[in-house]
Image 1 (spheres, rainbow, N blue to C red):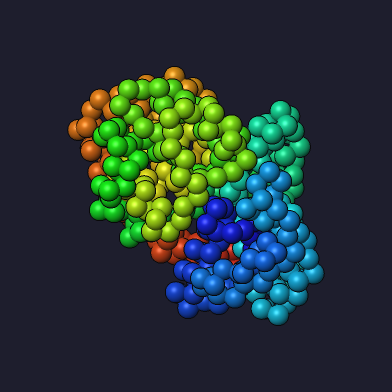
Image 2 (cartoon, one colour; image 1 turned 120 degrees about the vertical axis):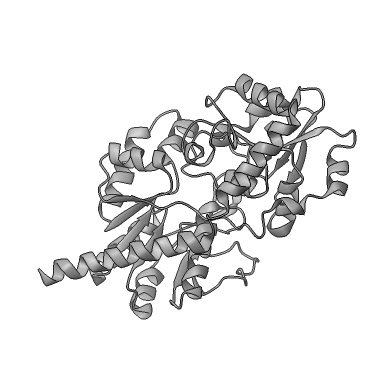
Length: 370
């Protein structure tokens, strides 16, 4: 079950549906519990399995994302489906109910940590990190297993007292995201004077710190392209002079944009994984990213990209400048990045997940037998 929806603007629900798709491919029968779409919107017809919708509200400040509310449909679905394992994607509100329902039914629960709530508390409220970690610890201690998407996230969880944590990364669609989708006509449209194109893809919200690209906007011969939407867009349009804002893009259109960039830059320091970095690498791009969180596992500094101090606009600018000046380095980083992610398909990480499910079920049987 996933706390938020839809998958084309939210990484948590995207991962949940990719997981469900792989389970179907392997002969299993999953059901997804997710927030209902906004009034007037039709449910996503591309879901690989049955989706049970529970009441939802728009995320404050970002109405494109719907957040689930507790509902009796959740427990009824688990009973009807006769679930063997409950998979909780970034549990916080709905997931807590799901955890409780699983416990009452004697069904093991696997909780996936995907959102840095403590970092969000610091960004939006300037405080509340300790309270956020108390909540995270309370929720995840009740799970049979917690899965962390990166080494940094795993370390954070263990440091804050969360037991039974294993590493489970994210997959990437290397067929959709690939270098040969590069579109020269699109490049001429985005950079009519042949500028180097530096792109950011993701939510436009305070925690992403996209304003750190302001220095790159000031570099001669560089065009910054922003893909995504969110509450920070009006302010960013003022803070990033000359940048092109393309809004939210998805599917093959997004893959075409990725491949048409020269450099990918991510600025957010609170990423537990950072899927867009992996999609950029699959697209054959050199990456600039903060040396924090998920990018530490993804970007090999000096081999597939450049890691910079979090929150340092000058370092972002200087990294972009160095890549802009060296086409050979860009090509080498991009080729190495593509090679690095070739084996990180959703099928590969999906099989790892099934292995975790199997171990949890075996552990439950051992306890019962004892």
